Image (cartoon, rainbow, N blue to C red):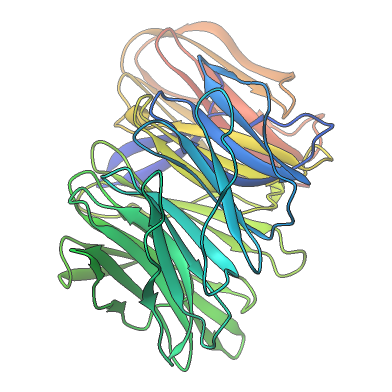
Length: 459
């Protein structure tokens, strides 16, 4: 299988972050914009997208299913889900200015419509989660009063609880970013306040009530929060600082065990236009590595200009890497989820690179994020005008092939074919002769290893 390979250096070890080639899952007749991705208890990977109607596909047995359509005849503005409960039911909800409603999918069909009793009325930013007792929780923001407060309710399968106010004060409007349970049965909510102050805060629901807020001082642009397998909490957020030439945007990773024992570590800083806006995604794998992704809006056409990645390996964050840019023609925030059965991080996004609104999916095999063994490869530069230097270190005798493919899978160059090489260092060069500008994939194969490097030719 061809793969895009990104090389990270940390403590003088070579780490390879391999991303599978993107697969478009929507047909030409149903263009779409990506909504969300999740994994159910049987290992099906679900992707939801919208194209007038709401559609979904799931990945099972190394293939994508036929389209599953979400039944809906009501006007909607926001969506939440899918989330999976302990009965492996897949919940998906929609909302507008007055209502929140949804259904669950039991593996064969969608159930009857369920309305959330929302008073005050719902407006935006509603989120779903499932607690340890298999109750479905809904959080929403309302503009019935100003400033906008956040409310919650949970559904036990038969009845809805009373409405609970999470936050309502005069400091500003409140918007929910993350909503999830931890291993102790508590429900956590991460929200932004915008008004007389701009800040990011978290609360937990425990013993029948919502706690006082923990405030991440001075941080409030956007955020994502996750609970790792060993009980640690991580928050990814950012802050824009306006300056004369535009803005400095700083991305922060926050790690804590129990509030308020918090450590803030800045993992990225860049100079961006003030109109750029971040989107964050966090995932924790079974080895307690934290996978952080963030993307930035382009102010010109509201598409995604850049997508970055970093990994927390248990002691430090790796240097952030640019994994997608304007050449990928990203038109939506990249959504991610962790697949514990396959030990993968899945990514999905919308792109127009094929001339239609396509929903694309790739994945990272977590167990391949390790020190390279018998053969090490390194390709630079990844964006080039003349040539790419491919350096190989062979630790034992092997047979090597290197090919170059374009974005539709056509082989455009053969650099070396089934050549037997002794241990040592080797250099190969991929030049631009007879090629058009655009992305290319350098596919490297030995008896034991298959790797792919993504490169971009510009003229």
